[in-house]
Image 1 (cartoon, helix red, strand yellow):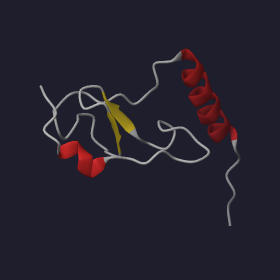
Image 2 (cartoon, rainbow, N blue to C red):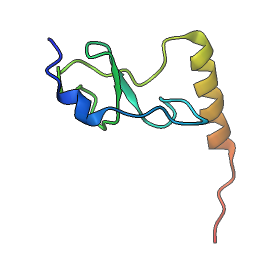
Image 3 (cartoon, rainbow, N blue to C red):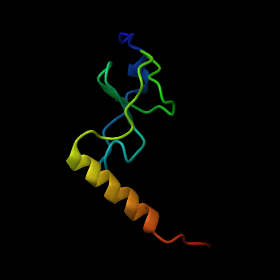
Length: 77
């Protein structure tokens, strides 16, 4: 499995004010790039994409953000 360069088309810009995983970006370990892709597998090399951070500090941040989003009351118009 090697990078074929297809992933460059899906390269994601770093979001301002929030984390990459919180905004739906995924990381390919083979291509070493964050991409905006809905699938579970990299469109370039076929390797499984990471959807959660590995670092303990960033895992805690993501959990807190998800929990805060789940606790927010829904506003009906």
